[in-house]
Image (cartoon, rainbow, N blue to C red; front, side):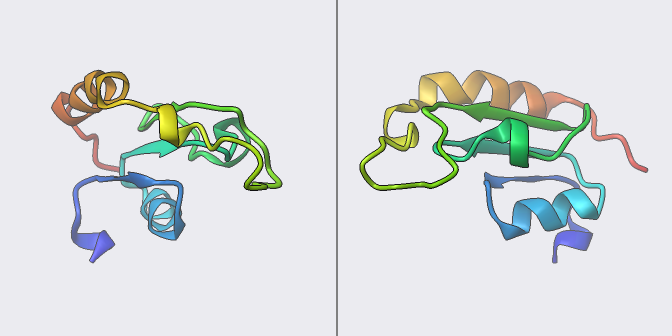
Length: 88
């Protein structure tokens, strides 16, 4: 299914990383996971993040996603969506 897609948008997850491995442009969002460590790299991959980032993911830490609003995500997502996907 991912192979047939032109691009992929979703949270930090297995499908995100599979899409990146298939060289699909991606848009992703991050809370407790640090995108500097785990996000797909390169100009084809856009992301938005709201920390604090903590690799231990203990529940005592706020995930950041709880505070990430649509107003923060939507401009970057629409820009990414409007961009021309380059085909490898």
